[in-house]
Length: 323
Ligand SMILES: Nc1ncnc2c1ncn2[C@@H]1O[C@H](COP(=O)(O)OP(=O)(O)OP(=O)(O)O)[C@@H](O)[C@H]1O
Image (cartoon, rainbow, N blue to C red; front, side, top):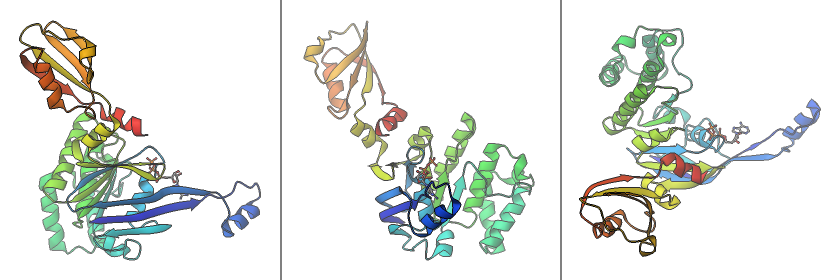
């Protein structure tokens, strides 16, 4: 669905000369410092995937997405969306992509939601019967009926996200770019939007690329995560593998039927005891060094276990380690 090969984008920063004429001359002659926003990145996203694209501010996420959407021209390298070059085939690629920005709406602020849908349908030249059918399906999923006659500025943020999602899906794109779709929402609204996004991916079969600073979005939605830092792709894989690679400790708490006979730390080099209290024992271990099942087997040799609780390292912490 998306193929990116050696994709590179650099910007020429205007020199900081006090004279406007000198600045203009430098820009025209190609002088000025070079800022590399995206550095020779490679990835492929298959149809139906839900991929998180994360990185700190200024890492190169928006620049990548703009090149995928054909808004920016790469300095070098290649992008293919369903085999098409987004820059050369911008109109056809646009018809295959839907975009949702959490920070700004693509709907017309003072118009009722219905009018925005009408304008978008005209822009994408959607056949009226097709539009009615798609809107009916989207209404079932996103519960749009009560929003249709309300001006966008009067919608709550959660309602606006539902309307924006419908607007992005109205022309039936196969691919969805989501930029901070849960920003500013309260916990309940976040949960609701995540559920909808998951349905859009699983049931409508849309391929999704999500950029977010909310690690819960990533953890709850994405089967795969790509991390960009200083323009370079520094990780591409599952969240589980990322945790393993960083090697932060996992916490395992067990309760024995009676007070256990736990040997001293020297006899247990693979893990560290975090806490012992009566029948309870909490240990830290590293999945990189030893699988969880093996740890459990060792603990079983200390007594009969009746309860097990495991806590993975906080994803936020994992990401912090990469940045
Ligand atoms: N038009 C431009 N001219 C010069 N530099 C730019 C331009 N657009 C982006 N940059 C620079 O390229 C780098 C990557 O920017 P980009 O907007 O892609 O980051 P981002 O990962 O999307 O950040 P954020 O999370 O803050 O949105 C930044 O250093 C930015 O200042």
